[in-house]
Amino acid sequence: MRCCSHACSEAVVRFTMVLSKKKIAEGRRLAPKRMRSHLGCILVEALDDWIVKKKREAFDRGVARMAADEEFLKAMAAPYPRPGRRVRRKL
Image (tube, rainbow, N blue to C red; front, top):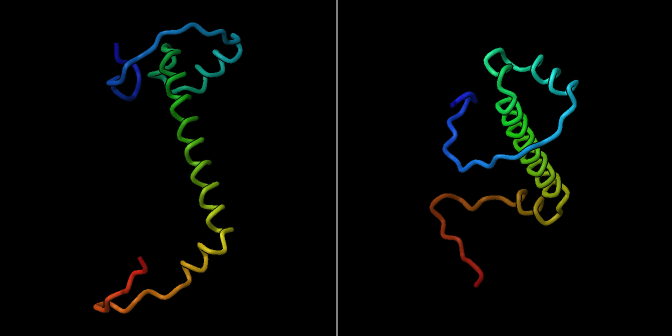
């Protein structure tokens, strides 16, 4: 059965979990109509969103580290060589 917004082309794992009735009711209330009767789809969507959020946070931390790195900032401020001119590389 395909209930989620994406096709399940990946291997799947079945498991049991415990959730409060209040959380389930709130999740169903906030879910789009097409997903309300499929708790598994709601949880898959929530986990997908959480993964995207965590990846974005990791990227943002990396950018913040670069912005604080003096050597990186110096390299970014260095002028580019003129087009057509060969650049000597240190070996």
